[in-house]
Structure formats: structure tokens, C-alpha cells
Image 1 (cartoon, rainbow, N blue to C red):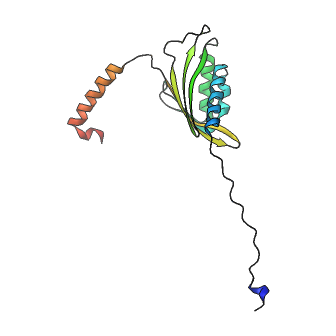
Image 2 (image 1 turned 60 degrees about the vertical axis):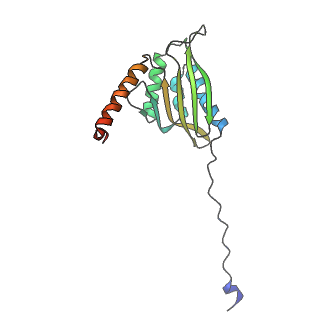
Image 3 (image 1 turned 30 degrees about the horizontal axis):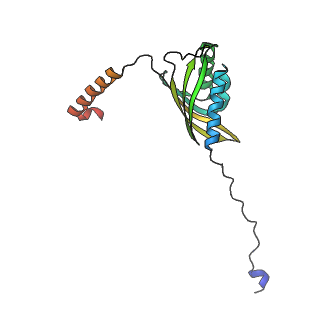
Length: 171
């Protein structure tokens, strides 16, 4: 057998698949700050470009999530037409965490006074889409206008007693 016949043909070295770099804390903070700067400018609907086409936006003031870019755009457009232009969104804190981030915020009058019942917190899931960091999921938890903590605890106590007495209720 000749040596040429026993040699394996030379194959090109496979190139490893390109990996998508993880989202850094700095990138998630920049994305959150950009979102809130867009809100503060009054151009709520422009913020829709920061979401993926399949994103979900949960505003706990509403009964169901805004699923997909069309629903999110509709919600943001409605906010844009309803929100008083002289008010400002103030981003108090950002908790960047790479693919997840959080924010604490409030609304102020032109004189710098906090609008009653305007504080809130938000949580975000971010993904890299192309070269951009985009929002895949957003949760807004605005301050409730009715403070029902005492009533809520009383209700929980009653539910706990019922479940303790009738464990089959949770099945």
C-alpha cells in the first residue's frame, strides 16, 4: 500500500460557531436609562423600538400583559396621549444585572414635587438582538392608589384559615 493511499485527506479546520456575548451590567443599565429617557421626553411610542418583536410588557395596572410589539406600541401610544406633557419621569435607581435589570422611579411636577401615587419599580429581561440590547420582557409595578395592606393581610389570614381547614381547596 502506498503512503499516499494511507494518508487521510486534509480537511479544513471547522470554525467554532460565533457565540453571542452576554449582556454586561453596563449595557443593561444603559438600556434602562435610554428607555426612561425616552419616556421622560414624552415620546412613549418611540420606546417601542427598544423591544423585541415578541416582547411582553406587563403593567400591573392592567388585567393582562401587552404581548408582542403591536400591543406594546398601542399601549405606549395610549400612554403618550394621556400623560401630561409637563410632568417628568424621574429614574431614581437602576439595578443592572446583565440580562436582567431593575429600576425605581417616580413622576414629578414642573416644580420638582413628586406626584402623589406616582412611585414605582420595574423589572426587565434583556436579550441581544443583532448588535443591540433589547427588552424581551418588562414589568411595571406602580404604586397603588388605594393602600389596602391591612385589608389584604386580613384577607390572607382568612384564606389561610380556610386552606388549613379544607386543604382540598388548592387542588
